[in-house]
Length: 456
Ligand SMILES: NC(=O)c1ccc[n+]([C@@H]2O[C@H](COP(=O)([O-])OP(=O)(O)OC[C@H]3O[C@@H](n4cnc5c(N)ncnc54)[C@H](O)[C@@H]3O)[C@@H](O)[C@H]2O)c1
Image 1: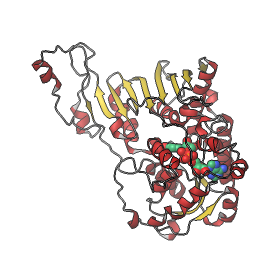
Image 2: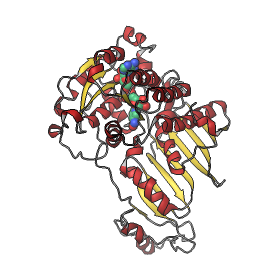
Image 3: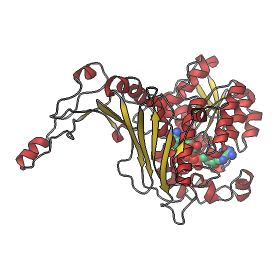
Image 4: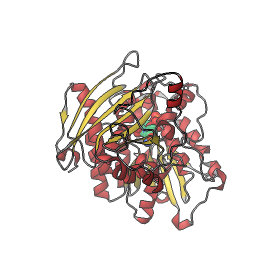
């Protein structure tokens, strides 16, 4: 999780041990040492490529899913392989095979693995994914599909050719909170959603270093010019796409989900303001997307990612004629549905029925502000801008954030369940996200054609 990346960076910078697992969303239902393993024929054997910050997050979820066994881990940095050696032991997996080169792993472990989970830097996703698919493995690959659109398209083509499953790691697509919002709250409560807003504001700690980076010959062998670029790959064009691709990819994808159509244009500005000297990719971007709906009406979304100020954190907001839904992967950052009030304060919708139907929860605390204001002789403006209080979204996630998306992937492998984020779907948002960076670069509005979102 991005939220934890700073912690990871800090510990990496200090050369300290990594956290054994990440759980941003509360308690796990399954105690690590009581992890159930499915019957032999139901067990899926997994290899991982990339065991950095996100590899460990995914590993923590994998270890808790019944019937999943991690057989092999590949990473070019010995430090990570040492981590992987003992990482899965508390979950009853003692003999994880370790590899520096994924080709050797695919070769030697061919008979032992059913699927591969990939969490390498974006520029390697295409090579790793296609090699695994061609080796007959199902693949779960982290977002963004690639920092180069042509490579993302290649991943889609390769999936089609091989017929293997390819799930992309936009994990909100499987999160029950998000599914509840997009399947029930948005269609039943919001009315026409004319606008959406999302942000990811944070303060970056600076460039990452480590006392014992991979040796220069290893870095060179795997395409990194030096340790600085290897650790900070997001800030170099060759390896990543800066904040927009890193964080925006999660949130822009939700505009697609809400409206079910791709955008017709993106306008953006941005800059490289956080690092001194500035790095290659943008650390802040502000952009506007226009989505033309089937009835010809245009909906608009504003997105911003900021790396110098964490005000408000990260969340997504869908603003309808009748109500607004605000949601975040961590409910403390966004968790409410707020109704619109008519002039004079009459609610547009009868609200209790949504509480009764389990879409939202009752408001937990009574509003005290009006009483306080009266006491202090403060006049409160009650014209149409007056806001109703928001009700919490009725569904919580009590698992690690990535676990439902991995579970969906394994259900697809085992029983043919529909993937929540197949490659073709993820490709659409990749088009929109990568175009925002281009709009900043070229200082112009980029207009899309419907065929831009399809891979042929
Ligand atoms: N879904 C999410 O919430 C989420 C959150 C964070 C990161 N991510 C994604 O996960 C991926 C990894 O990000 P991260 O933060 O873990 O980066 P990271 O730098 O912490 O880890 C990347 C790991 O990949 C290894 N690696 C690099 N090249 C390799 C190669 N050729 N073969 C094998 N291993 C190689 C590195 O040694 C490192 O351990 C990125 O695509 C990122 O966008 C997703």
